[in-house]
Image (cartoon, rainbow, N blue to C red; front, side, top):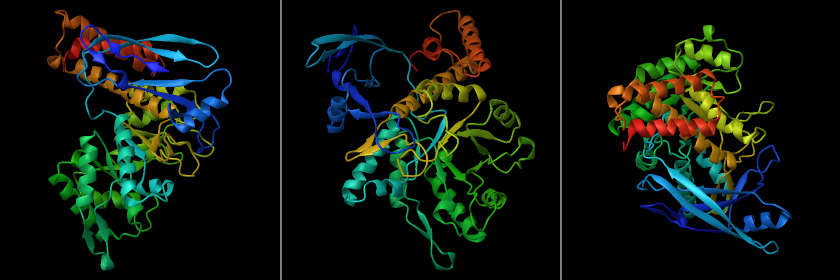
Length: 433
């Protein structure tokens, strides 16, 4: 396959902005369904293509530069085969006249820990491994998600619960990730220091909040309570956190068959299994306990909404469902093939991360959620609307009706058609913003 430049009347998106992948199977996970995306000219891509006798599926991505002019772009793909001649496939790309912000409205917490990555690259030197870590971070940024675990925590405890601090590496990591658009950083003290006593727990949180506040990172920092902490209950952890770090939001998990009416109100955010029925999620959201995030991780005996076993359209629709319900965050414990039960979202090879179809769908879904959130914000703040037509009221009524219809159907709408409608109204509302 050979690509041409994408041309419009006043601009060009070069063919170097187009990437092609071959759909194949990679080890890792519990399903044999193929969804790994091998770069087109890689060795594994060539091997995958040789195994297919009649037809091969490809995934093509176009990166639109931030300064690209709005409008329609036309180009194509020249296809050559060894035994069936060649052909030409046309491409038309529409670029809307508005931008998405660097930080998404949907909070995301995808597990991609340093130790997990190190186990996947056991023989690599530290210098090369730092380069690999950087590639994973860039990949996460390109997919608009905040990946957790590869940020070096700056505080450790010594003998007698003495606190030792080393902020240099932490500041470098956090500065890079926030500049790349990370919208969430969760502190997991139970994972790092499982035997902390109350005094050390409070001391660490107090020092951590002070540092985050000085660096102006407090808005992305959250404390994730640990159900398995040996010394402190969830309520105990929350009570200490409120006293030591009132500026850090508290995240807790709703486990098992807990009912909304029986949950104590000690957390700002509750993480709920995504497989819960809509009526229970609606009750939780209306209960006023705090923000609701969904855990989409695949678990033994219960496949999550982002597993291979689900159809790809259901993975995409999941984000429309979240917006319709009022869900504010998404958790996925491990995006990597760690050997634990579950389906990885990113596969690994010698050069770093290898995408999957579901990883690409997650990016599209997060952007769908952002489209809806931006339009909701424009509707609720009419003084900020810069309509390109004198009939502002008509545009706002149209936007409200569209959002009402999507929410009333729980996100079960024609995704492609409604995304086009949302984008067209956003273009009218937001203009060049």
